[in-house]
Image (cartoon, rainbow, N blue to C red; front, side, top):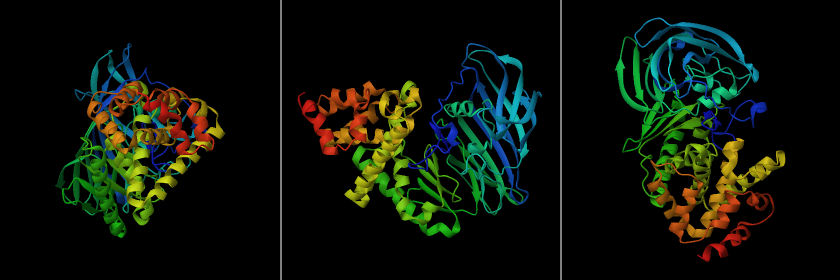
Length: 490
């Protein structure tokens, strides 16, 4: 999920989907209410690929949203990274201790637990800045998460939070770490690498400066975000005419990168035509990562497995990720249902497939979503009995990729394409800055379509009767007829 804000990230069925130790699936993410939060990183990294080593300095802004003062602050780093020094915002040395420990709920997952002691407790509502200077090597986490192949090398260097390449404010448990991904921060990055390498990042490129045998690449966050990803290789950089769509590709995959760039342009234009312009769709970056490293996505970029550069059939993964630019903002209490982001991106992916590859491609994609939901329902009945509106509380948000997409498919069929398009356009206009809940979306859908959609929302969002329809053999036509007559009465 890559770790996404729902867990570790990525595209259904496996890519951009939680890729965490299997025994941890289904665990509830514990609230990290007793820890401080990171609101900003200023990270400077110098990579030495020939020696497979890095040195770094992370200036971190902390806030305390809790009712109790905070003095001891835990950070997690990769097991072969060690803190060399810690300072407060005035440059005074801070006491710290560090030790390689196992995560409490996954013994094979070893991390460097760094516990920093502030000179004065951080009061409730207070903020402070600290600096951690650290160095070492990274050799992935294959023994726990097979896709985490992150490494510092001359052919390719990959630094992600999945490998704890920068300090994560969390305790030594997967639940605490996953909770840390729900915290948004801004950042500035400064990455120095040999001149033979180009550094790629999903952030906004600021400048490149040349040193003695090195180049320093600077990036800044485009929006408050939840992760930073850094790659360095002998990239070829492709851009569209406007320069807002960018692909970083390995030289041998330059032809495939050209195809991906065309697909990025095409799907962006399609979504704009169907749903109207998006304030979020101003730029998008694709970064090629080594095959097997697990495609992942965050705000305005995707780390794309090399296989997708070679296989044109995988371009739908881009459709999904770019579709997120047409998501509305969700209220905090419903965010973890993943319906307001992953349900919409998954359904948008399917309709883009229909536009570019035909009706069969759409039908096949929706059938895959349905079968995946059926499979999860067979494994655990909670998947079938829990309403979409309760997915966040039960940590079942992965079902929004599947049943969530079907809920939008059914709604689209009830109101028609024109009505559905206007619902999305209106929702984006009303909830791009102001967050929405399920009832808010229902109000917009009913107002725009001029239909009574109460039975649909009762059974697909607030209730679980729809699971029986989806697990059973009912066709889409039969499902829609269940709601169309009631909807037309308004």
